[in-house]
Length: 114
Picture (tube, rainbow, N blue to C red):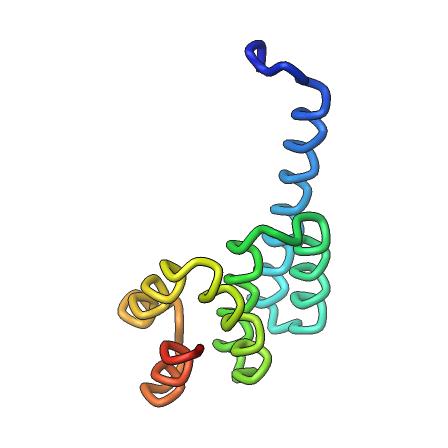
């Protein structure tokens, strides 16, 4: 931080980012408790704090897909894939490690999004 020309704004940004990730973590905990309304609320709170953060949007979408809410997941994933194609590559790898639990047909639908 000592080499930052504007350390106070940077500290404020880092604090906001930390709080956004706390919302993401709370969303993940809500998913574990099968409380999808609370999970969505937490994910949306995080995304509102950092609307351009594709990682937050991506994991929100993957959670929706895992909870049989594929249309909502697809609506989020399409723009993410268009902005950063590497998220599509990662998605293809998630089923092998148990982080995406959709059918083969649903995975194909996700991976062929335009």
